[in-house]
Length: 187
Image (cartoon, rainbow, N blue to C red; front, side):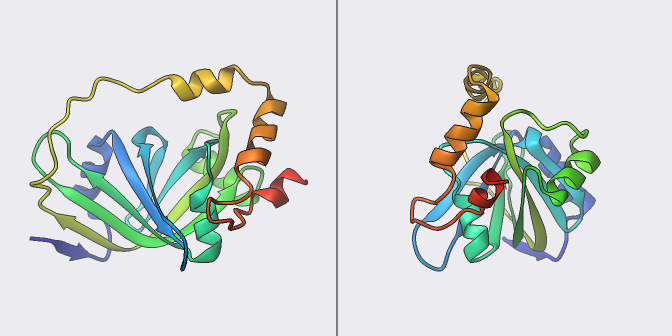
């Protein structure tokens, strides 16, 4: 039942626009595979072969480390309401850390030019393959809203606290790989 495409059609883009959550997957040649849930309000469809998401400060930085090691990445969307469907976007990931020219350009072009205080990077996916499948095994869920925990956590910290937290938690992956964040903090 799976179908493969070399780009996102309008129908695929419409499916993405209706979702509330997506998952990113990445891995280096060795170490752990990382799968992370992300809210779709940070996702942007830039074109039929390009998507991005704005990434917030978190307790790890696995995706950045993996992109430096082996920049393959997958985005997965599941229909938790309506007709069953799974869609995966396979491609090459590119990290644009806050303060870089790429970050600033993407922020201006696709995120209104204003970064939230806790934004640390924008990740861009160059899509090589789009795969859709039935999604018959995906359960139905009712969406009740977004959690405010991350926003409250950020609001309770100063800008210096946010930098210090990143310097403590974002410099290396759980497998000890560099995340590319260190160069940014030394500028």
